[in-house]
Image 1: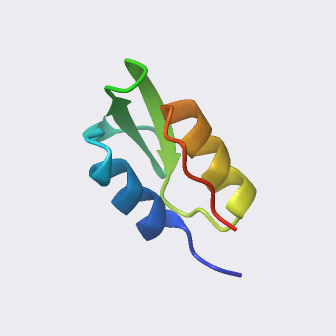
Image 2: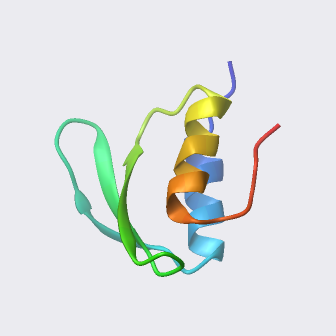
Length: 65
C-alpha cells in the first residue's frame, strides 16, 4: 500500500493550510483558510479514500488516484 501522509501534507501546504498542533494519538490538527475549518490529519494515512476525505474536508479540489 502507498503512504499518503507526506503527499497530503504537501498538498495542504501548497494551499496555505497551516499546522496548528498535535492531537491525541497519532493525529495532527490543521487549519484550512479555504473553508475556515480545523481538520484532523492522521500521521499514518494508508488509504487513498482517507486522503481524499481529508482533501474534501479542507475544501481543496484535489483527488488522489
